[in-house]
Image (cartoon, rainbow, N blue to C red; front, side):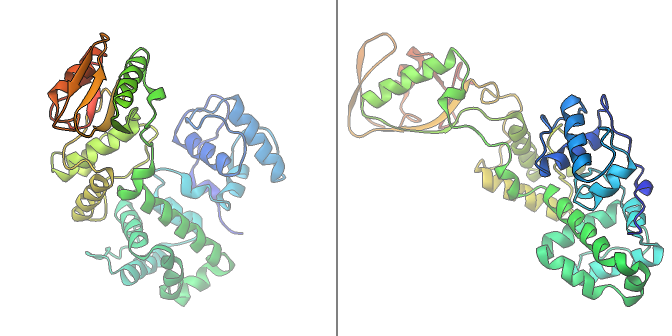
Length: 359
């Protein structure tokens, strides 16, 4: 194999290192089923132990330090695709593509994916070409690898020789990673919202439990749709809405640690459509959720509470109260008063939302 890992200029990783490459390395170790501990970008003792285990497994010097010898082996096993903000031209150099081969690659991406507008065929595989690669994978998906192999010239294949197949595999894997970093409906599965009352904070949890018991004892149907919302999910929901409403450009969305999302697509139209797809998946319309809501603080619950006819329910003071129509707690102010007697307050204007203080 002729690949030269040194051209990527990856930092030496050892105990005490703390950077994005450490995060990529921890993700890689986890993908290798090694006990890395927390994936947090902090190279601690557990990461060093997992590194030594990886090195032993691959017949490397087991010193717990990640240098070019270790990187070189890991690069053939998927590590490259986990590196954030990898310089496209360095990647091309690593894969053995010179300027002529990069131009051939740019032409091939235009041909295979019909990129609108086409990439400039200039031999510079910079940020715009990386966006084109992500767009090509988005459009062609698993077909991209085979179609690129057919489109690339025999001169490029001859130049890379026996390294061509592996180079194209690494390039394709990196394209797949870039594609799934892009915003879109697939992010809905990340950082899921809890539906468990047990995930609420004390003493609010006990207040919700008491209110829920009174509701069920009275014959209500209670469906919990959300309790704790992770900050990362709130971030995704908030900025998807703001991008779609054109309140902020995808280029200027602040980054959040631990959320490796790319809001900027090949075209602005693509960014807007991806934001809309996220909103549709979350089912929140176009209103940005709060970045510091009671859900994040574990002090709110979204639920659907309905009943038939007139019910008799015990309030937080032990009194029994009759409540009729409307037979939906989101619309019935008498039920709101019952909730407040338990310390669970309705937020007007947000049908399912109740919280510790009505916000």
